[in-house]
Image 1 (cartoon, rainbow, N blue to C red):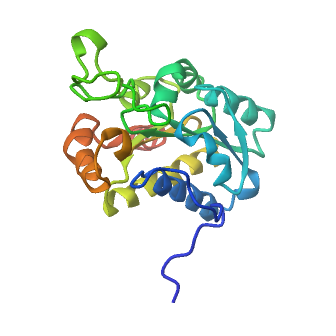
Image 2: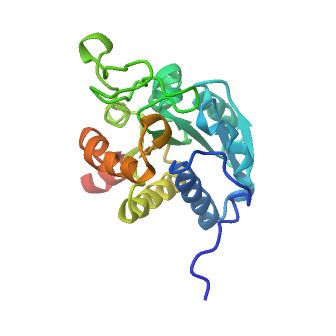
Length: 252
């Protein structure tokens, strides 16, 4: 009996990610959603700069590389070029999406572009060496905040899901995590829903995934998973922040 089969949309190659990094789990969930919806031949992924810069090696669908932070803008162009045919998703980290790419993110949501964004939040710049990111927690030690993030000097972390949920254009915003089995299952449901919403023309969907970065956090993989539970989730609560479709059904 087959207990688990690798998703067809996921390439059978080794990942370049550090030991304990949960990018691999998120890749699998995205690939499973693509497989289950039968959209591999129609799907185009957009990978910008960051740890996900080599994502084109891992998905068996068409992939486009974007400049740092510009993935939503590239995705917008791809989707609008043939909106009935293309299913477009971006795969972005917090340094990319919430910093240099914040304008593209906000305005894509405000326009209700019919795209899917997978936003991986590990509260640090991963690829470039562990600098403080827009989502780094208050007091968090990073390469550029060796004494911890000082909110009086650096400001507070950006809570992307909460912010985007206030935009009238955004259709579906949910924050999930992949640090235990229950959360992984919920993350899978959210990612699949985000793709399904695009198929049904329901507009902008973003799934924020709380992830780990053991290397730049200076932790073992096990301790990093605990840190997600003890530090990240309390500051970034999981849940649905906006679901216009569900809200419409309730009003009806």
